[in-house]
Length: 228
Ligand code: C5P
Image (cartoon, rainbow, N blue to C red; front, side, top):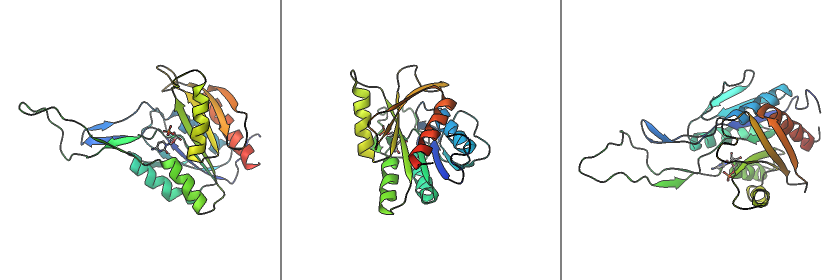
């Protein structure tokens, strides 16, 4: 470990929440601030990596010294990542991707109507980008480390980590960073408490502290997995 552990490595990071338009003035969004993803991009840069950050909606300043691509929707995020993934040694998928988007995007603002019914919004599934990046890597037989995040609310004692382990298998990524989210926890906060799960190790690593501290720990763990 130490500074420079990712020297010469190309790291692709996604951060922030996607916004899925309903009409020209409205969208469906989520409460992601992008802090953890932006902190990861900065930590990778500080570790010597060449960083590309694909940023959806973020509420913090974007870091200097990294290449930034801005996106809005999940579909735009997907295109940017599919385009960039072939050039990355490491992919850190921290974006909060909307699972659903409005089935149609109206060209004019939805109006209140005196006569008719209130509108009903139909939703369709967005693609699972993380799973797709894993499939692409496997198909192209690239050596690339892929890390995902899981924000779990848990629906019973002990279920959060069981569920996360299943998610790691289902998505096929190498590392999964799990945070337990609740009403006031995590979103927009500076502190975080996570477990890092690996496909190759049965024990998990607990990290607690500021989102910068957590980012540094994740980068060190990525370096360890790469055998640096
Ligand atoms: O399935 P879930 O949303 O819990 O998985 C979270 C992980 O998957 C995160 O790394 C997130 O960036 C990614 N994800 C994705 N595409 C989606 C939904 C989530 O890449 N449509």
